[in-house]
Image (tube, rainbow, N blue to C red; front, side, top):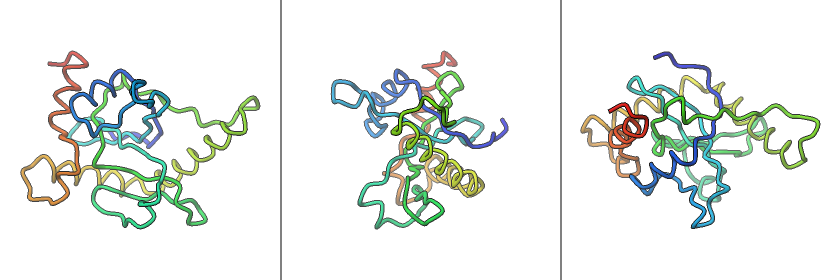
Length: 175
């Protein structure tokens, strides 16, 4: 499997809900708890010959104090402003069927809010593409640390990648 150029994707809500039932740390998109408007956005990288989506999140106050580490990166714009974060510890296995590429091209008919969001996506994607080798390497290193019985101290913050892979296979009728 070949690593493609990094792009931003949304994930099929039904698939995310299914994974959330397997591991509560997979961000919920459940309407029952008011999360139906949450968009699960991320980058797709290849780990162990599988596609994984690394979730991209809006920064919150605690992210300003955090340093980059094996399972976390800050995304900053050209002015050094924190605009997003990558949570490698929450990356999930995906198949092409679950991926919905995000249209970040600004259109005449877009609202001001849509234009602002699309520009934010462009800025985040530019940073990610500029740092693609680092992102891909970090994702693969973390995957190895978490799946090969290592003593990695951050393992408890990470999803159970092997368990989610089995669920992904089952969901996509590959078992």
